[in-house]
Structures are given as C-alpha cells and as structure tokens.
Image 1 (cartoon, rainbow, N blue to C red):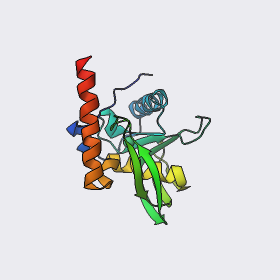
Image 2: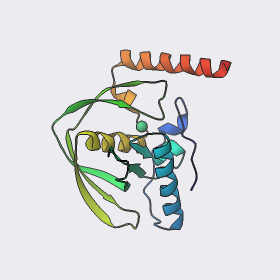
Image 3: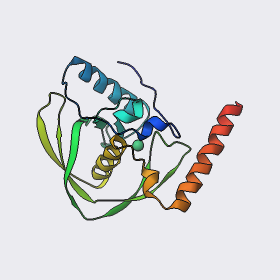
Image 4: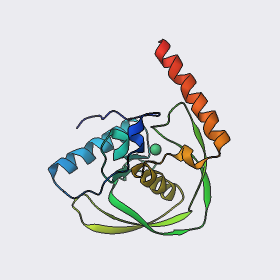
Length: 170
Ligand code: NI
C-alpha cells in the first residue's frame, strides 16, 4: 500500500471530469487500497480519485466513528434525492482550514458498482448522503466552495492564498 499525494487548490486537475471505470482488475484493487489508506491517514470521511490525479469515477468513504466501515464506490449515480440539509463541509483539496455549510439533499439513493464490478444500490441520509454528493461532485470537477455564495468563495480564496504564502515563506 502507498500514500498518494492529494491535489489542492488551485490545481486545475481538480477540474477535470472523470471517466467511467471499465476494467475491474488488480490495478483497480491496488488503487482503491491506496485511496483508503490515504483517506484514513488524512482523517477524511471520503476521497475521490480526482483528488489523487486519477481521472476515473471512483471514490472511497467511511463515515463511521470506528473507522472500519469501508465503502468503495465505482461509477456512481444518484437515482433519487429527498429533502434538504445544510451541514458544514471541508475538503482535503481545499485546505486552509476552510469549511462552510452547503445545501445538499438530506437523503439520496445511490446506484454504483463495487470493486468487482457488481452493481449495488445504497440509501443514505445525513453525513453519508452529504459525503456521496460531495465526492460525486469531485468526479465532475466541482468543489464544495463552488456551491457557496460569491462572497464566501472570495473569502475562502483569500484565506487559502494567505496560508500558501505562509507555507512558501517557511
Ligand atoms: Ni472533498
């Protein structure tokens, strides 16, 4: 297993739309293992392939407190949405300590394939539903900050610039 470097803003590769996975093989299993390891090491609840510079429709998530409920999602599609929620979101690719409330569906039904290519469906609410919507956005080149007001986006952009300047000075 290996830790993978995570792309961060303003890296333009975060804006590339990912392509469907067609090969369910050993390379895919290795990639997914590395994604889980990288997600756990970074204390994230989800990680999309786009964030590690792989333009394929894959994400991993674990929203449990015990950090032992791995879910690997390939070629995801949301087939129904219900209600609304506004929870705080952050992102390993945005950094700068930026987080904010984002409007998301409260409940979603996900259709996807597992690591073997077998189709499955999953009903999710609350944090898991938020995570699914956030990660699918990544696969479409969308970041949570894109869903905030222009004013808030500007504030976050400045915050990130500032923290990057500090890092460069070190
Ligand atoms: Ni993210």
